[in-house]
Image (cartoon, rainbow over all chains, first blue to last red; front, top):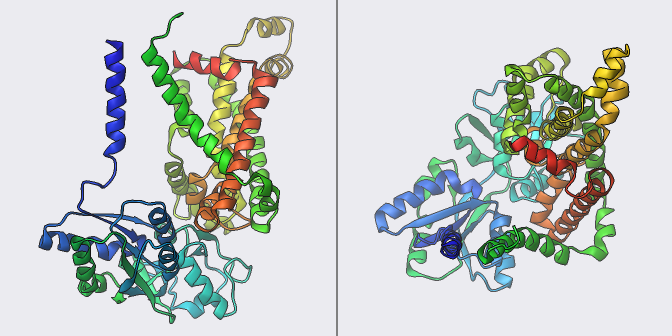
Length: 241
Length: 271
């Protein structure tokens, strides 16, 4: 009796461990979390059209790249930064990539812009604002740091008195949404979030790149579908790829 | 129980392996030889310094308000005290991120008290070490309260009654009889609270943010280093492991004895 009971528990545990992942879907996509607003819609449309089941897992590009490098069974990787793909190519994990959408840096404020902020110049001049940015360890933060350094500022210096360097683009948006920060350095596409307004910053175009990790017909089909999914991306505030 | 069935033994070993394997993994992969050079680089050193200072301040405040709270709780057992006891121990089981959201709702800029703080004093807590201390207090204070409260409930009250009959005032009895009697519990509770404060991440990120030198503690640094420098992340994790091991060894040998205070109070609480 005891033996059976123990064996049953063991089997259940093994079963549970074995079916926790997204293996049931035909395609597994790892995508930079800032693409979520557009990608959810685009993927849903693709599933309807093709009948192919797709599971998308969102996280920071650097985290996803590490997962791919560690052998996570993914079909497609959408990265917000080319350096991750170059690193994976050096290890022969991806062959090539194309862009599917673009984004740019923006000043995030609450929807009604209670402080009447007009843009980057004002943010850099005023000293009564609570400002957050992303840490340079994540793509958004790296882009933000590059921009600020060009303008003669720094992320961690005392000149801007930033309140926090967050670990992800969503955390920056969340701090502004909560009202904890008056201003955040985020993506233009974050303006698509309820309660947020994004003021464009003149700066470089940031490309989202898509790569096939595991070659398959269904995978190639989704890649070409997303390359032409400009409407979904434009609706969520992204530029064309 | 002389003879433990084989199945129980096997399941028990699986349980042990689930805990021990990750620890061994960390020990085997941590860059022990470079530990010092990694720990002394600017950003890591400032994170260690910030964590040390904030966690010690947290522990002092926790003792300062936690012991009085435990005394109030253990005074007698009536309805509102039982409710209060359940409420103040809640953060032990509450996910820290939820704790951070709760802290925002109270002390955030749109929170009940935080709004007044900003209006009256122009204080915003995001990005300040004070916010780190508040987040640490929220998660660690309950550990101290539980330890001291159980010790107070299980104490022998006869000596205090004797002191009272001999004319000792309540304050004097508390100072000279009660508190010395539960000193081991206060030390154990403070140590556990300190260890919890050192490891605090979720509430800190949500409530205090993460800025080098001001709010970026060791756990916050590990989270970011994982993205850029996994070697350094493992080094810092190893430092935390050493701290945790030192806490356990210290507690066992000095104040608890094997199977000592913390474990016995935990079982009496379960009943």
